[in-house]
Amino acid sequence: MTREAEEAGADGVLLVTPYYNKATQKGLEEYYTTVGNSVDIPIIMYNVPGRTGTNIQPATAVKIAKSVDNIVAIKEASGDIGQVATLAALADGCLDIYSGNDDQVVPLLALGGKGVISVLSNVAPRETHDMVMKFLEGDTKGAAKIQIDAIPLINALFCEVNPIPVKKALNLMGLEVGPLRSPLTEMTDANAAKLAEAMKNYGIKLA
Image (cartoon, rainbow, N blue to C red):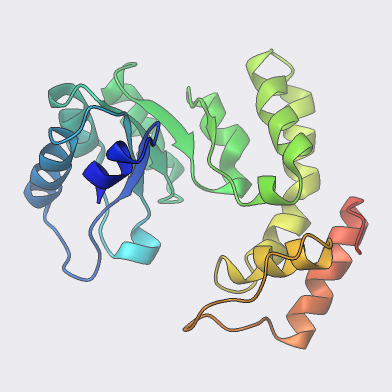
């Protein structure tokens, strides 16, 4: 499928770890190396153990990046800031690190991260952009304020399994992104009300 993406004109791919059949670290190394060597476009590894049951250890991520030229970054969604710190120390610039958790953008940037691959940005793109840019431009206090102010909305966007809340949020904004596909189900009325309230409190206009 990565070859097909390249042939279709994709600029790059976000490649998640295999799920259900939990790979060893050696298995992850072989997987990413095989896929990486089969295409020429850049690859971002996606480490999200909460969904896949498998964690890319920092040493493994760095070994892969150093052996495969077009594996250039990692979306780190382990939620473990200590792991990110170890990864940054071992990588020493050989691998760009992006936050996969909207509630940890500024902490990850403080460890040398490049940005965020974000859920929040779907409903608050300017604020998400400004949070990153303020930090990168040296306004850490301003970046931290945006991060902290967004926490209630971020929590609401994850009160049910992603992407259920964000699709609901976009529909509430009048963007009409449509229904969910099974096995995902529509938000409960109670959570939908909490989400709408969090959006209004954040200043997002509802349709």
